[in-house]
Length: 340
Image (cartoon, rainbow, N blue to C red):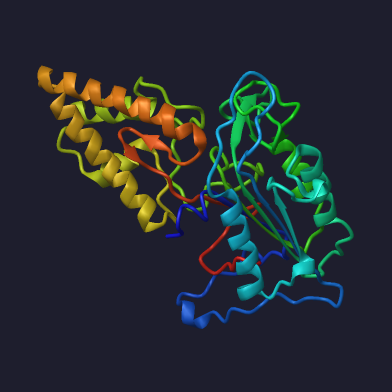
């Protein structure tokens, strides 16, 4: 599993030629000879890397919380691309809100959109060109009227001089903007790898397949979690009351999860969450214990208010639960290779 300080959510997008639907992948991985994609003489490599620590105050009355590792992780990515993937300095654009940094490379909304335009400019179809986009900083959500947003919210990046928690989208970069300028602008046969080290970023590019390594939760809600129980937890408790001796796999089927292609760690996380809820349901019979649980929940809420807002942790039902998610514009198989 990738370290959390480097990967939080990893949407991945390519536009290669498709294998026909009748072609079946080989039974054994050894029978499949992986190869690099063909490139033309006009293939290019470009990377746009953004790291924001929010050293200056944001607009409005709210106080934008500073981050500690945005610059460090951005520089680490630049070094990784040069050391392992053959990039050179001229192919990498690094944007930091660092004192003394060039004004044109400060990660404001205007500058970021300009650099995205440079990233995707002049690419040729089927050239095999490779693009990398990396963002480490705050992200947020704003109300949306689009029927495509399941939770009624648009995800967005929070550049410098932007208010993270206000409902205005004017100074933020919405997922719709990223989809239009970063994804839809590249021709077929060009490979884009986008890494978002930020909250709410699993659908930041609005890709068609955004849960390639995740269990589907029917109650999906990317908003800030409240003290009240989620619909998923209530469904679990109801099933446990009706069938107290139900097996884990039967429970998975009743809740309608998709198991195909789920990585082991996410599967285990779901199992652990299930066991945790079962234990808490039994403890609810004890009034004294219930009062203790209420106090723990209050403490967790205080922790979330104190730590969760700065993007360092995501707290789910009393435990830290933050795993990378993988998305793509087309279905992925175990034989696909991430190109950088």
